[in-house]
Amino acid sequence: MKKEQFINHLESWTDAIVDYLPTLAYSLFVLFAGFWIAKRLDKGLEKYFQKRNYDVSLEGFIRSLVSVGLKIIIVLTFAGMIGLPTTSLLAVFGAAGLAVGLALQGSLANFAGGVLILIFKPFKVGDVISTQGETGEVKEIQIFNTILLTTENKTVILANGAVSNGTIINVTRFGSLRANLSVAIDFTEDFDKVKAMILTVMANEPEVLKDPAPTVVILEYAESAIILGIRPYANVADFGSMQSNVYEKIRKAFVENDVKGPEIKRTYINPED
Image 1 (tube, rainbow, N blue to C red):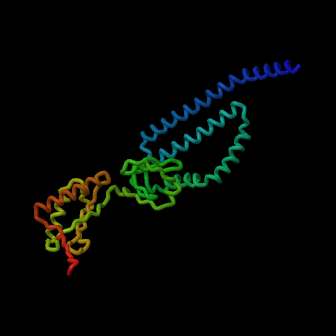
Image 2: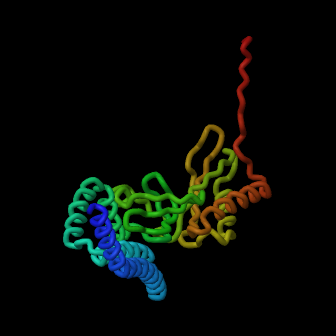
Image 3: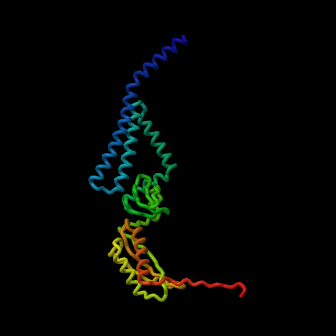
């Protein structure tokens, strides 16, 4: 009797599995096709934004948002097709979402921070910023994070919540930067002559901007020298090389015109005295 019951159960299970297989196969097809379509749609959005020259910062944020939203819809559709009650599932997701939301308040703050960054635009993709102790070029603004590429070629991922609530220094907001260079000359040198010489060097340096015009000032009188402040402007891309070029050419001009540097004075103390 038990053997017959087992065989009957086995046959019913087999029939149920056979009947369910087409539904499962079709549901899996919809799941994988949905993810494929979501990926293609993301590529389509990328091309759409590029053709219409949309803000790159907004593009990355919208693409991330659409991608996550579509994947949630696809998973819910798959769950409904395989027979899971979507109403109950949504209720479970809602309760889980509330619990996760309370546990992950930081992530929600990061999402809100990303929205604030896109609305108020303290920076955009391509800007060089300093924030949270890091300096680098903004490569991407995502839903929860902002990605920087530093001058050391390191990728830094910063939470949007911390970025939006912290101090942000936009280095490239106006397209140019001012360098604060300094050189020391001997007290006996003619300041006006040296100043004219340095200004000529910068006027002949193609990476130094003409507007705003560079300046040369006296910063301080040190113990054995006059410290000069040299303030040229350059485009962001030329900033590093400009400083090196200006220093190199000023040195050559000093050598050619016999401009003396500060005299180093040493005092020797005889312990026997």
